[in-house]
Length: 185
Image 1 (cartoon, rainbow, N blue to C red):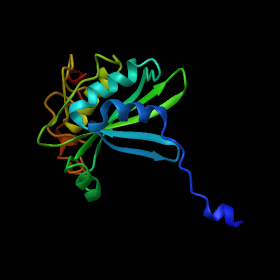
Image 2: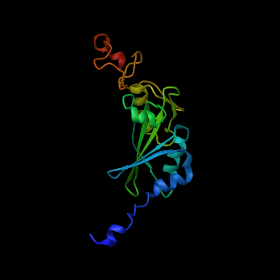
Image 3: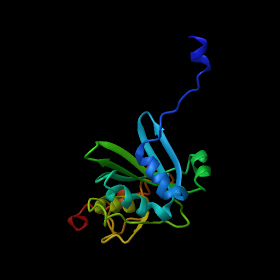
Image 4: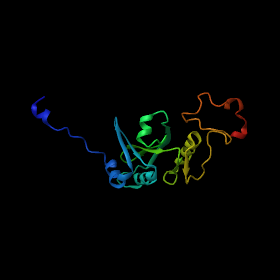
C-alpha cells in the first residue's frame, strides 16, 4: 500500500435513490435505515407508515408495485430493539418489490401494545387482505380500515395469539378442547 492510498479518505457509496427520496419527503418519520448484506430496510414511524408505503408504490421513479409479504415480529425478548424504538414490542414488516428495477425494500413499522392499531394497506395492495388477517389472528395487531378483519387460521372462539413470545410453547390445552368438526371451516 502506498502513502497516497493510506492518506486517501474512504469514500462511502451514496445512499440508494429510494432512501434519498424517502429522506427528502419523510425526514421526520424515518427512524432507521439498515443496509445489511445488500438487503435494504427502512424503519418508519407508525403515523406516516401508510403515506410512506403509498409514496413507494405510486411514485413513478420508485414503483414498488408488488407487495411480496406482510408479517410481524415480537421483539419482547430483545431489550436493545425495545429501547431503540420506544419499547414498541412488535414490528409490522412489509416486503416490497419493484418489477421494473427488480429492487426489493423492507419497510418496518414499530407497533406498541399501548396503541395496537396500524392503518391497513389493503387500499394500496389488495393482496394485503389475507396477510393482515393472518397478523391479526396470530399476533392480535388491529388494522384500521381493513374491510374484513376477522380470524383466518384459528376458530373464532380461540383465545390468545399463538405467535406472541409469551404464548406457552405447549399451548393452553387447545388440542384437548379444539373442535376439529366442520363448523370450524
